[in-house]
Image 1: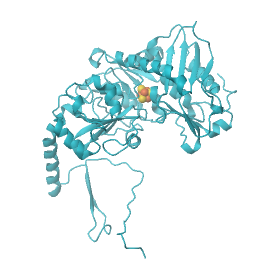
Image 2 (image 1 turned 180 degrees about the vertical axis):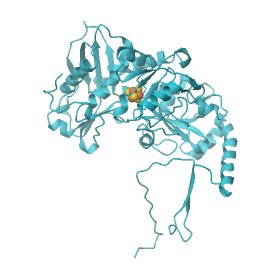
Image 3 (image 1 turned 30 degrees about the vertical axis):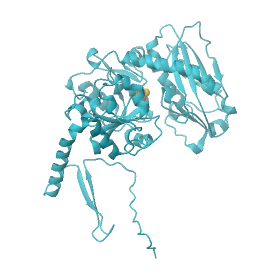
Image 4 (image 1 turned 90 degrees about the vertical axis):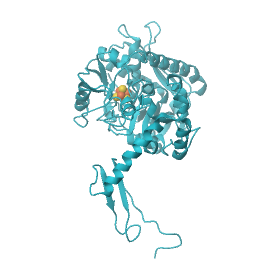
Length: 475
Ligand code: SF4
């Protein structure tokens, strides 16, 4: 495979390249665009025009510098051994292969795909989707030899993207519908994926029927098909081994897998908890499950939501907390499909005395609620607030009481625990995980105390500034 005719270098070494707004020539898809997608279809040899690249809409060189455009990427492949189950896994490789190009940053998947092309790449002559299509086709054939023919079509025009976008959404829905038909107890093999390790080296997905990959694009069927055709590839089998904790979804095989794949960084995962030994998150999660301590419940926000969530943080700020391969109790990257699994964060729910994990959810942005509402318990659905119902924590608290959300029943116990902790603090004993510090000379003669209770703080820097009282000028 040669890329001599491509004006920029190509290779895995460029994965993880960041292209900031200042460096970009154009942006494709992403949160500013309503309709964008990437889709892979297996078609017959007769239907395919091998190595053909088609562009519907304007080409890269005709786009204005600094502009944003829709993007649809349709990859069609053929080969005697190909099956429809492989489509989703092939589709996920669009992310990897685009990122092989020095000067392209590709994020996310399905209808949240987001690309930036750098000014440097365009200056070097990488100024047409013909070139990107050629790179994709060559990489598909070289990296996945069961693909014998491939063609790629790009859509960059708002009108022309409409129809293929609708088809793509239909295909995603069919895949998700099928994934809902089986559960962990129906299978004796789980699957892993390390495609995102170039971005998050300690992250590996564990894909089970009840826990679709957090990017939402690879379900258990897809992973099984991929591991079968390419057992040495990025998707692999995980024999579950002994089940150590059914409620939490803790398995010896999954623990061994994460220990090996995270190079010893992480050695334990609860598949069905966002609070204890949660699954690691890379950066591709469709949504975030976040803990809201003030109401002892959880919120869910997806990456399409442009406003701040109920905790006052935008998705992007929470994504920084959640991603990077960390195990971050209270911030868990999830797929939308996982929310409708009966095992959704069941450990967190049951240990609080709730019937199921979904009862911990007190808020979700309307986009998510509209998408999955039909699959959630009918009596719970109206009790989950959205941005249309409440906009701050105090209002949420009142709302939960008014609608008698099941989480309210857990408040008395949570309060009792808190009081117990406070009592311990006042005594001679300082509980584990509680740090008290005094900064003398700041904020008055007596200084002040910052109490950090049962929390982990990760920060590159903490800046403490003295605020001058109004009317008092520095000399
Ligand atoms: S999020 Fe997980 S399943 Fe999806 S591509 Fe990344 S590692 Fe694979």
